[in-house]
Every structure is written in structure tokens, then in C-alpha cells.
Image (cartoon, rainbow, N blue to C red):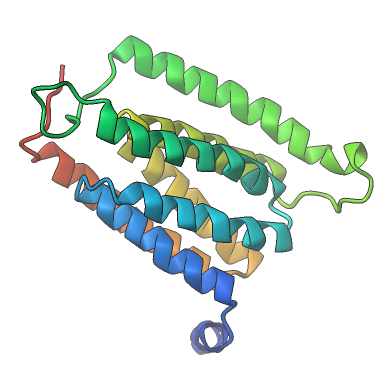
Length: 210
């Protein structure tokens, strides 16, 4: 146990600048999301940009490729939270999908995980200059569920917190296994923040569930 904490301390003292920036912007993005602030989107964009470098260095190609999608969705979410509300609404309300819509979304996410995981597992055969992907199916799971989570965020659906909780638990373990402890710490904090965010949204006066 002492060795574990020594490793954490040593890692903290020599943390890569990009990982530190990712830690800061990632925490800010979730904090603003809990507060229903539109600032969650610019913070999320900055997090995505620094994450491009981090994921390339550790060969999590799924996260790298899908962060392009995350960048697009962050830009869209920023636009929709500002312009998607009705004229009589001061801000975009928190809503939810129907059971049928949620089932369809979960089914599409599962199919996406299977196909994207297969793609990542064989990516080094497609591009021979690339090293084999690390943990392709786990990588695919967190990546696809994150896309689903961000999509739900852009529409301000309360279900986004369910997906983020699942992603955070998985990612915390993956990043620890890969040795990027501050990203593992970040997602450990995200687990707590996902629960806090869900509870905060449930109490929000801006909540309009079906």
C-alpha cells in the first residue's frame, strides 16, 4: 500500500502538462454541467483538445478517434443550449426520453460497442504502421457510451448521468491499468460528481420530466 501511494506521489510530481490540463478542464466541464451552466461546453472543448495528445501517446485509438466526435458534439451542445430553448424559456429545461427511446438508444450503443471494438482490435492490420490497440473492447465501451452520454447532454436529458456513471467507473479502472494515474483519479472524482449531478438535476426547478 505504501508503494502505491509513493507511486502516486512520484507520478504527481512528474505529471505531464497535457494530463494536468486535461484534469483541470475535465473537472471544470463536469462542475459546470452539474450547475446547468453553458460554460460546460467551452470547458469540454478544451478538455477534448488536450486529450487528443494524451490518448495518442498511450495508444487508446478509440478514445482518440471518437474525441473528434466529442469535439463536434461539444460545439453542437453549446449552440443548442443557447438557441434550442423556446421563446418563453429563460434556459433549456431538463427533460427525459421515453422508455422506448431509451431502449433504442441502449441497443444502438451496444451495437456500436461491438462493431467499434472489432475495428479497434484489427486496426493494426488496417494501418500497419500503428501498434496494436490497447484494451480494444473496453476502449470501445467507454468511447461509445461517452458518445451516447454527450448526445444526451446536448439535449439536456437527465439520462446522461446514467451513462456518465458507467463510463466513469470503467475509465477509472482502464486509466489506472494503463498507468496514467491522474486521469484515473479524474474519473474517480467523476464518479462522485455523476451521482451529485444526477441528484442536483433531480432537485432542479428547471426539471420537466414526462
